[in-house]
Length: 304
Image (cartoon, rainbow, N blue to C red):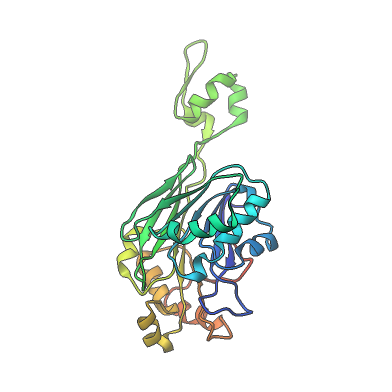
């Protein structure tokens, strides 16, 4: 099982339906969780799909349309009731704090933890957050209001120690950290044992991009070229292209064209308009352009 997974909590668009929940998904990198967007009911979806609240420390909001952020007040409040003590960092547009602070001051006056806001410039491709295992970058998108996507780029991991070889050369435990960082081992008789003989390479780092909401925007291609998985909104089908253009959304065909031009390994469609009863048509339309297509649905877990 991959150590880099994405769980879809909601893949609907602005108008509520019984078929889909509003937009939200969780990136799971070896049990460290990162929430992308937080539509209404996100905390309920997290319960439903057994997402561990205490593993989540960062939330990334693409833009301030309600179907992408109205779930934040409830989520923040619930974290408080569960006794959270560690900081929660919310990354998003400049007006994020202006939206959320009055609600927190009214309903979350005595939180046992601190909510921190990190302003993201949606017009720039820039590093937003990084820790020892992951770097997150903003991706400028084209929508009715300032909007950005996010690129989650796993950092290269240290090679794995080959236990049999370590035992054969009687390598002391104190030497293992250096060997994993590329240091050769020298035996007591002066023999140099290359670190490559004592280790095997780790799996290649994975990259995942989230692009919702946006009109067809080829300018994002350099930022997502060659990535392992792309989530790209497909609010409309091509027959409703005029509606897509007027609302600054994309069709399934346009999402596939972006995936094809960017040479990504896998395309995930989502953010379906409420006007469509069956999402199968999205896959058919996209697959005619780009064959490696997955349809989002609530509870879907994608392993990179």
